Amino acid sequence: MKMEKRFFNALAGSLTLFLLSSSVFAVGHVTKDGKPNYAPFFPYVHRTNIVVADIDRSLKIYRDILGFKVAFKVPIRSAGIVHETFGLDDDVKARIAMLSMGEKDALGRVQRPIGLSEVPGYEAPERGIYESALIIEIDPKDDIKELYDRLSAEGLEMGELMDLPIPPRTEFPFTDYDGHRIIIMQLPLVE
Image (tube, rainbow, N blue to C red):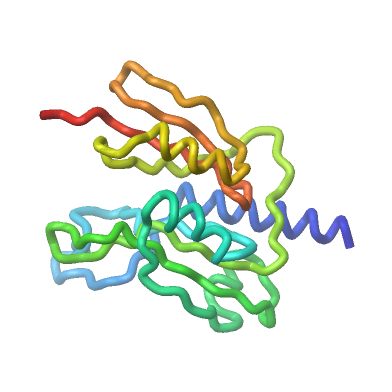
């Protein structure tokens, strides 16, 4: 049983990394000239989906602290793309929450860059190194130290808050509840 759980966790982690690094799945229409109406080019990274054990717990980070909006949260139908992608049995009850960046872009679209795919019982695989990281840029007017402190208060694994020279920016990494490495980046305000 323990070996099966390790295999499942390793498989789910590997598939998450695949989606983080190479997601080109898109929803929308392509015009007659072959261009998508939502992006000027292909390949276009539509979003990333990450596996979490508990959507509501994960929303403490992504919604309550980082400020993403929940576009929708729904059960996933059995034997769908999430089951196929993450190697789940057809009878596994899963949910997905699509996170948006809030405001519509210049073309009137709401961007939904992150999907949280809930798989009950998921545990982050043991790691020696992190294979990838999701980089989230925050508003230059936000207090990055306060954000760091709020995430740290959740008991998360935190990296060092660093001022970096090229390009000038402040960054820090942290690991969410489900083992995903996230980098928070803040570029300076240009007036």
